[in-house]
Amino acid sequence: MLKEEIYIGNKKLSNRIVMPPMATSKSTPDGLITPALIEYYKQRAVAGTGLIITEHAYISDNGKASPNQVSVSKEEDIEGLKKLAEEIHRCSDTKIIVQINHAGSLAKPDSLETEIIAPSAVVHPRRKDGIIPKGMEQADIDKVIHDFVHAAKRVQKAGFDGVEIHSAHGYLLNQFYSPITNKRTDAYGGQLENRIRIHCQILDAVKKETGGDFIISIRLGGVDYMEGGSSVEDAVKASVLFEKHDADIISVTGGLRGYINPDDATPGYFRDMSVPMKQAVKIPVLLTGGINTPEEAESLLKEGCADLIGIGRAMLKDPEWSSRV
Image (tube, rainbow, N blue to C red; front, side, top):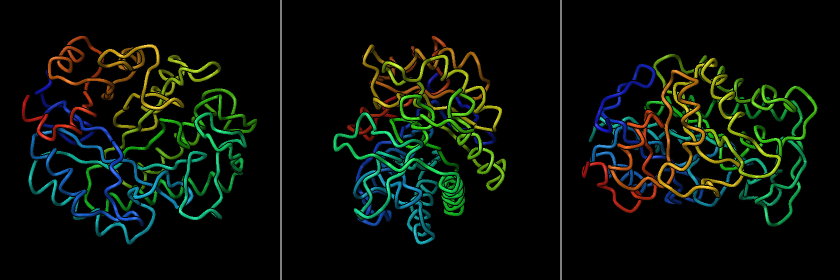
């Protein structure tokens, strides 16, 4: 099954192998694409990877997560992004999309004066310096939606096949989703439908601006694996709503604790979410997590755990992983 074609929206992938987003710090200090970054993705594309999802790119200065992170925050970024998209499409039939992100209370802006924002003024459980972010007002929420949309438009203008909206690993949209970091009492807090209101508004706005031939993926950190955090039931309900709001694919991963499942280290360790999600939606579900061999990937597909398999650390170490299938 791993070598079978599959459609995501109107785009056909040549196989079910996906390179998930992994930060490289290969961009310039101000977030521009470098020749080294282009070569990095090119190696994995020519090996035959069906879909590449690039490392998370920040949509605004106060959403930057780390030094040398790729930027999609300004028009000047388009030129470098275009070179990357053109090279991947020139050398392969690999589809490539850009993960766009706002770090929220995990942000590490270049300037110490830049305001750090979050759904609520609570310390992030993974933030060791104890910084309390500013709880977002409606104007802040509106700006984040605006920034996601304009980032997506820049990605489309650069010639990519789509975008992935990042709501995982404890970043801003995942902070809205998780009851641990979302203590709001307005339309964006409380029950699940409110906690993912901003996600649905972003999905609607991006779809409206980019049209039907542009892939929109959403990466959901569905379970926090922490007391009082998000649950598998939350993840399934959210995936159903995301499908209704025109998401083309759902990528399953962890929440506030990052890309680990503390209760399971076997290959495909997020299948506790992906299986019921796949049963609940018709759009493709992408599963990553500890999958190292073609045999492991094939087994997970045959067991109905997902429609697509993400090969992360193994492909990071071996650029030719896909060709060995």
